[in-house]
Image (cartoon, rainbow, N blue to C red):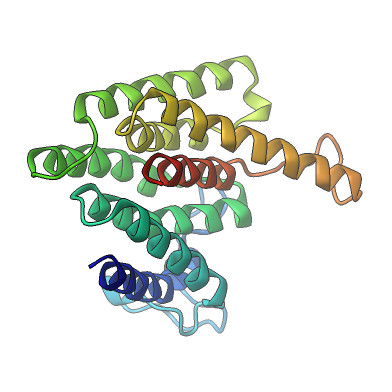
Length: 235
């Protein structure tokens, strides 16, 4: 069963990864600017869902995106197994990859993604909690989202230059996912994100590819840390 589930999750990862480049290109704009209406060749995107799904003409190569989605989805399926919450994690993977790529490109996490992600994660985990076989706590997940959101908001108030408000809006979604499995998981996943960010910063400084004032997106590290926390909780 686990082999077939992992294979199915990998197929989902491939499909999701191939669907993301166009949305990445359209949403990777500076704060305050409208989403892109044309691809890099000046061709206007079609209306409706077709204008957001796919990679052709989007100015983005899908290989890295597909690899990230496949790896994360397959790992989650292999470790979480046939539990209701797996569906939630598989939905969040492409969204997380999309957010990470946008943050790396333009140093922002769009509200159009972070706010719906928070609401959808809370709702989907609530449904998962009603189904047999789940392994987590929905009330604790909600509290985890509130706590992590408050922590990041406090960090933003202390040092606005060191953290974007998009990170604050992403934090509740990650708090929901990590809190589902418990407070130690919430701490581990959050701490891992900060450690990864610090290590990356030190490497960039050591290789002289950045200085102390060079901006660095933190969203990808938050997401990787949260994924690591979930995988650790289910291993």
